[in-house]
Image (cartoon, rainbow, N blue to C red):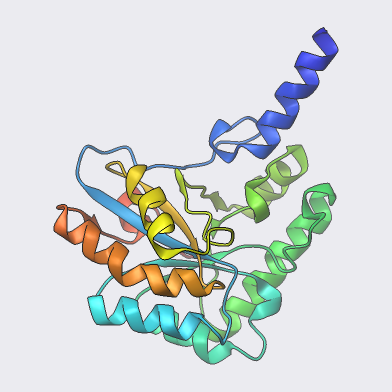
Length: 224
């Protein structure tokens, strides 16, 4: 029974990024002010990233894009546009491999550094913000993050926009969990995200929320 409890604790600590079990991960901004941060994972991708950027530009809203390194070659223009339009560029590993969390610390660090190189070649700056693939943490990742000097960022609102396909249900899920200082996880790889984003921004503004870049809210440097 003790072994079962111990193993369950380890699994929970790995799978729930908000647990901070293996390393401290910021998942919400400590504030009572009605401010939130929008974050997008898995780009840059030609199908949906341009539409997301168009919406953000139309509403004059900043965001953070956690990029997969292998998606940057061929999409350098999208990355450059996101950066030049004032959005934070973060690191989301190079491969986003399904078994990424089983890699050794050295291989994990190599992936992060490879993504850094791809980002730096386009923007001239090396990202400091890092979001773990799938939100999974473990001792190896903790070691790689410390050695690379990254600032790990999670979320307190997981939109599930890669699963939920109906715009109304997605908007209800996000707004139902909304709190001051919320960090909202979205993906610039889903059609429903593009569909819901204008309504989400309008809802936030109509309910007194300001949308800020996450590095500004946390007073942390975005780049090395």
